[in-house]
Image (cartoon, rainbow, N blue to C red):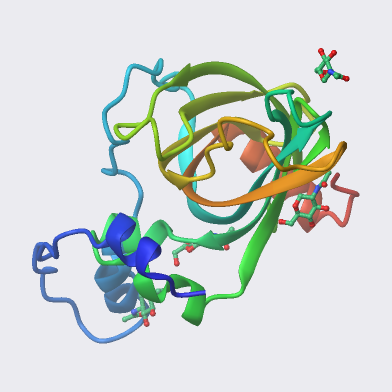
Length: 220
Ligand SMILES: *[C@@H]1O[C@H](CO)[C@@H](O)[C@H](O)[C@H]1NC(C)=O
Ligand SMILES: *[C@@H]1O[C@H](CO)[C@@H](O)[C@H](O)[C@H]1NC(C)=O
Ligand SMILES: *[C@@H]1O[C@H](CO)[C@@H](O)[C@H](O)[C@H]1NC(C)=O
Ligand SMILES: CC(=O)N[C@H]1CO[C@H](CO)[C@@H](O)[C@@H]1O
């Protein structure tokens, strides 16, 4: 899982977190120490994508690792996208603390899955956030567009989860081969990729979800 590509993509310079003010030992002290995992001050890497609305809150940064899939109708066709499949790992702390994401996949279990329900409809199933289907609203070329799939703004099409937008950023890999040369008709070409998914949710809807859970009512 720990490829050199991965290290090159996500080795972010180490920055020291501001020292926490002294607190008596106890639960509030532990919370204080772990404020460095808060996403409150995390900014997206800059891009031309429209920022999330002020009413939406960054609730998770997930590292996605999987494949972008393409199909070839025949040898002279151009590869066509048929979606992606990826495991999602919780990278919130790593990004908030600006530490390397290199240990994320070794330390953490997946917090969700990303796949497509049809060729153009991505879905994200995330523990605690439910199943959200989205549509691609905007795309921006990655800094190395020849090697890395574009950065995206995805907006939720269903409102039965609290998730409103997911941005695909800091992509690595996943670009289709330029031709179908040598591919059998109908072949599926799987191209490994990684991305950081910035997940934004509506705080009111998150609160409503927590309340439903506490009352034992069904969630999606
Ligand atoms: C896409 O690739 C994944 C492997 O990453 C595979 O499990 C999945 O079935 C493929 N999807 C299609 C439609 O071929
Ligand atoms: C190959 O596939 C493309 C795209 O579907 C199609 O336009 C073209 O006619 C096909 N060529 C042959 C020889 O079947
Ligand atoms: C991700 O990790 C953060 C920080 O440890 C935690 O607060 C959050 O609940 C986790 N999210 C999920 C979906 O596991
Ligand atoms: C002191 C403390 O509780 N630190 C925790 C902060 O969160 C990280 C990631 O969840 C834990 O690994 C630390 O133990």
